[in-house]
Image (cartoon, chains in turn cyan, green):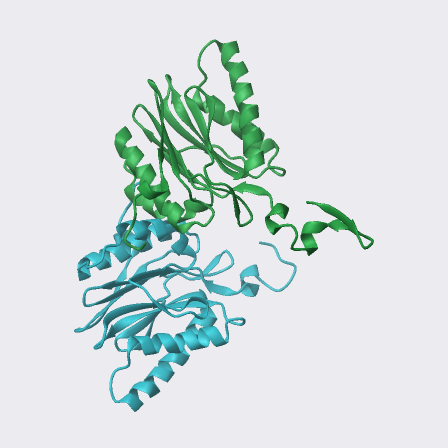
Length: 217
Length: 231
């Protein structure tokens, strides 16, 4: 694009994580997944960004919306959770982490434009997925977010079953991400997965050519 | 919009008063989910049945599957007035053409007539149309003419506001070589999923199967639609 001054147009566009994010509960834990594309207008400024951010050992959040806003919220809550868990003397609850995220999202809802899905495992309630869109707090068996999520509502509604195993849930998340990435221009790259259960946290990255193929590919 | 002369004002009533509901100021749209699938020997088409003006549902039993010829139908989405008018024009043109040619028209002819119209008047129109049917030269064919007036043939096409939510489902579940019954089940399920998520789609699911033998129309009522775990 030709510009008279000011350099390429993407320098003046806000950086957004276009995004598809998804969190699913299974019996004994959760799986969180995201794509890896960060766009500024039509330009992809990072094609390998990990949008699954650590809040605590067994609590992660998935970022979507404005990249700056989402990262800042995650950093602040990470700090607050650290302090909280030291005071408590034990690992924090997932609901506490989600409440901290919700408090920031709600208080600054006019200024911020980010949606975080908070998911993790704790001793009291096992695997949990919380939605904090626009400052609400709601626990759901599965949640999708980001611009790519519109295209997979039908798919997740049809395919989600209660009581899936760990492996089935990971496959479900990877399929959902792949479908969304192939339809949403703001989502793409590789798929990042985080699986959290009683025994620990497993991070995985699935490269583009290892993603499942669907009918028109 | 109603005009009221009172207290030296001659402004449209609906803008300032609660005397007239605000949906009278909104255009009538078919919010919609529409879909069409090809199979060997014909096509299956489906649509929801909701027409909205703003937040008011003007018609909850709309028939968005409109006949253009004996074996050619179209699914309408976008502005209800625009799509009805276009369908009328194309049906007339196609009728004339088939009399001149002395044989039933081809699906791609109907699709091209739609495209010609939608592209020429693209600035004035708001219409997304899926054309599908059977002819003896090409068998079952589905063409999509989205807003803007492009034309492309696809084995499966979805359209309307509710279609965004089922792209993933359709990509995952469509397989070439399905039978007519499988296509009908696939379309019914996809429509039900979209109707559940899209506020502008709902009501009943209307289905039509077109083959050489003829046309079979069916309706899936609200309480008979498949349900899903999240509801």
